[in-house]
Picture (cartoon, one colour):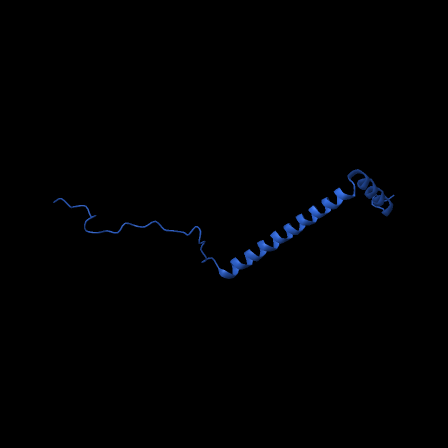
Amino acid sequence: MDLFAPKHLLLILLIVLLVFGGKKLKTLGSDLGGAFRGFKKAMSDGENEEQAKQIQGPAVKDAEFPDVAPAKPQATPESKPASHA
C-alpha cells in the first residue's frame, strides 16, 4: 500500500479542509506564495549585486562609509623640537 496514493492525498486534503476551513486555507496559501516570491526576489537581487561587484571590481567605495586614512601630521618648523646643543 502506497502512502501517497491519490485516495490518501484526497482524504488528507478533505480533513485539512474540515479543520481549517476554506477561507483560512486561502489566506495561508496566499501568504505562503508571497513568502516564496519574496525569497526568490531576494535571491535574485543577491545574485545581481554579486555580479555587479565582480564587474565593477574592488575599487568601488561606499559613499556612506568612506575609508578615510588617518591624516599624518606634517613636519613644520614650528612643530619640530628644538635641539639643545
